[in-house]
Amino acid sequence: MPDGAVPVEEEPYFPDDAGAATQNMAAVGSDDATQAVPRVSDEFGGRPMFRDEAPPGETSATAEIDLSGLDDFDDEPPGRRGGTGTKVLIGVGFVALLAAGGGGAFLLATGGGDQEAGLSSDGTATPPEAPAALESGGLFPESLSVEGTDYELALVDDTEDCATVGQGSYGEVLTENGCRQVIRATYVDADGAVAVTAGVAAMDSAEQATAALEAQDLGANQWFAGLKGKDGSGAELMDRSAGQGSGGQWGPYLLFSLTANSDGSAPGEGGPDLEEIGGGFVDTTLNALAEQTAG
Image 1 (cartoon, rainbow, N blue to C red):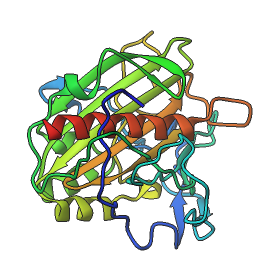
Image 2 (cartoon, one colour):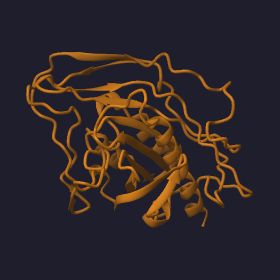
Image 3 (cartoon, rainbow, N blue to C red):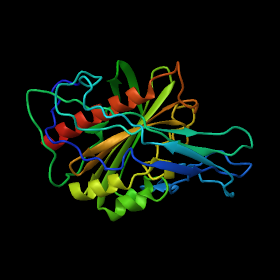
Image 4 (cartoon, rainbow, N blue to C red):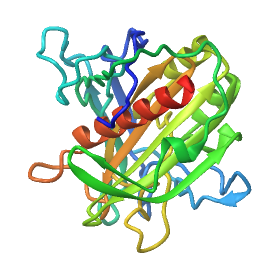
């Protein structure tokens, strides 16, 4: 944990049905389909964002995932990062499985396990009632270390046009709930093996942040979009890679991360622990956010 990090006292809010229902997600049936994630606007803050478009085609199959088996971690030992402060965030996992060849593709939503963001320091911090304008440099430095691995910043985008940062219609949800600002940053590890898009969305109030959180539906592509980097950056597939999503709410802010293998391959045994990495980025971002809003 970075020196001078500020702990958070307030417990987060999470939707009641976060792990309750089974979801059926239709597969893309078109023979030339490459993915099921629809493209967001090609213009992001006046700049092209290279979002992929969902190919046309009729549904031919569905993927059924039961989320009712998510564990309750209330009785678990302290968080995996050893934090002794207040628990503030929970991770919600997902995997996007991309079919090869002409088999189409589909999005598979699954419970990724609860994650705790433990924060502790000599001071205290509570989330503000209303968000202040955020500075991207203070939240996302040029380099940082997460879970013992060094990462370099590939690109960062800061926009007030929240409609451009969501998959599906989630950008509209953000706008309707008073989204003021979204900052996203994509990092790549030194080996070029893992890429992470981390971000913060500032809403008008905690109540509106809660409403936007409750509207998230990973199985239906209602979530934040990954931020794609340039060719050769190691982040060129972040808008469509299989990956792990983590996030939660702190007052009027929504925090999130999307972690993926740089080559676009689905997470699997023997590879990097994308869930742990994503949770570490949420922790790091929350520490930076608490420090910035306290100042």
